[in-house]
Length: 280
Length: 165
Image 1 (spheres, helix red, strand yellow):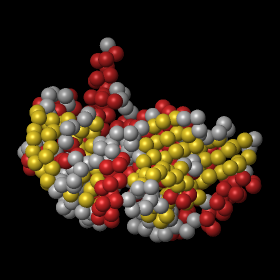
Image 2 (cartoon, each protein chain N blue to C red):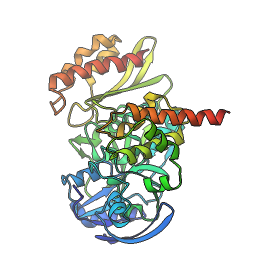
Image 3 (cartoon, chains in turn brown, purple):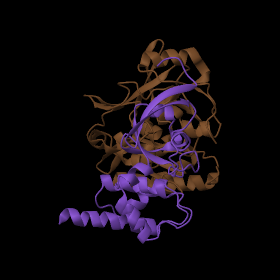
C-alpha cells in the first residue's frame, strides 16, 4: 500500500526539530532513514499526522573518536559504519554486525539512531549498544540527557525516549586492552531480521573470561543480556559448560518462524559458536 | 522549511535533467518517477523495501525508491534505469543479461541492474558468493539467480581482464 496522508516538515537544526516535536506531540514521528518507518506507514501500522524529517540537520551524523569514547551521531548511515576505519579499529563488534543488517540499498539510507530509537527486538545495533555499554544522548526541551543502553530499551518498540525528545547520538566507551568481541546471527535469508542473534564482548585472558557482556536479540521483546550465562563463563571459562544457563536467562517467544523451544535451541547453538570464536 | 506541509515543492535532477514539481508529501520516490515523470522502468513490487524492484540511485548511491518520499529527494541527483541505459553505463551488463538469459518477465531486472552496477563500481572482482550476497535484496521470481550471477560475474571478469592488460 501507499503511506497515509501526512504533513511533512524538514527542520535544519535540532532546536527546530524539537520545537516541531513538542508542538505536535504524539501526532509527530521522526523520519530518519525511513527504512523501518516507511514500511510501517505503507502497511498503515503507523499513521502520524506529521513527519519530522531530520535528514538535513547538520551535525547529527558522523563518527568521532575521543580519548574516552566513540561517538556515533544518530543520523550516521549504516553504510558509514560499515566502511569506517575508526569503527573497525575501535568497535569491531559493530563492524561485524553491519553486513547482517538488511541489504546494501537499505544500508545506504538506514541510520544508527533510527534503528536504536525504533527499538525493534530483532535489530542488530541495539544489541551491540547493550553489549558494549553504550550511552545514548537525547535532546529535549530541558537540554541533553544521557541514558545507558541497559535503561534505554524498554520493550517491544519501546525506549526510554520521552515525547518531544530526539535521539542525537550514542557514546561507546573505548574498549580497554585485551577485550575482544564476537557477533553472530541466524536468519532464514541473508539480510532478514534475525531469528536469534548474539553480540558478545569481554575480557579473555589466560584462558579465562571476565567482565563479560553477552547480549541476545530476536529472542525477547528487547535486546537482553544473559547474566547467568555471563557469570557461568566467568566462573568456569567453559563455553559448552555454560550454555545450560541460557535456559534460565532467556524466555524466547514463538513467532512466525520458530517455536520457543527452537529459538532457545538456536540461541544455544549460536552462543556456542560466537563465544567459541571469542575464546579462540 | 518549518510548518509541516501536505504538498511540497521540489526540484530534483533526474538523469541529468532538472525538474520542478509540486508533490503530495506522501508520494514515494518510485511513484513520483513513474507517474509524474513517466519513467516506468523503476518498478514497484512489495512497497516495503523487501523486493528491490524500485532500486534507484540518489546522489550516487542505490536506495529503495519505495522507502523514500519524493519530498526527501528535493535538491538531490536521481538516476534511474532509463538514465543508466541511455548513458550506456550498463551496456555490458545488459548484453550479458541477454547472453546468459538472465531474465524472463523482466520485472526485477531494472533493480537488479542498478544493484549490480553499484557492486561492480565498488568492487572490481567480486566472487560469486559476494555477488549473491550483494543481490540478496533483489528478488527474482522467474529465473532463479544462477544466470543473473553468471551475467554479473562475466562482466566483472571482462572488466578486470581489460584493466590488467
